[in-house]
Image 1: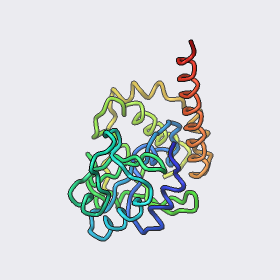
Image 2 (image 1 turned 135 degrees about the horizontal axis):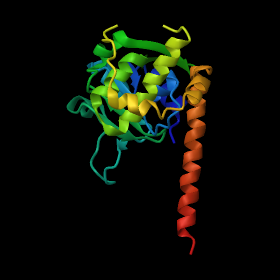
Image 3 (image 1 turned 120 degrees about the horizontal axis):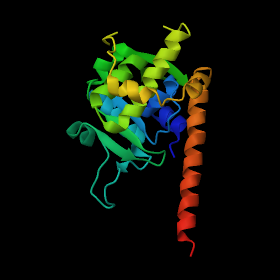
Image 4 (image 1 turned 180 degrees about the horizontal axis):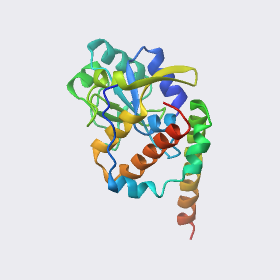
Length: 163
Length: 60
């Protein structure tokens, strides 16, 4: 189970610059599908990686699916050395993505983001059309149903006169 | 916006026939926060069903 409210608050209160993508972004746009983690694309600046490391430090971040006992150190240097991290935390599973297929980095996604307010937190969320492009580009068979639903959402919104 | 117009994809069009649009319309009437609360409720249900499944398998 993911504590969405606590995770989003944790990131936002630490001033982390991130964009919601993946299943949580799909939920924000109206998807009825179940998602098991929170996917965010984070800004790869030194300051932001320091904030991100600090925000999650007290929530037992560890590599998801990895055997216990690895010498995994959670800090800004680890973030700097890697790019994408799939983690478990005591607030739930979170994927920290430095870059995504078909979307690029944080700065590339920003022009296509909307701001949503959820659980008292204002956060950037990838816009519906760009989210569809990104999921299409990922080309994973498991995403086909998700893409079909997102495109249906776009059609329904347009049919009801939304931009 | 950097996004190019979406071109129809025949495979996705085929999947689209299976999409329950009543659920989408219901969700679009909700606020973003209500959509997340719904997701959390769905996660709880999934977790409970997994637990029930595990318990059943353990029974002799």
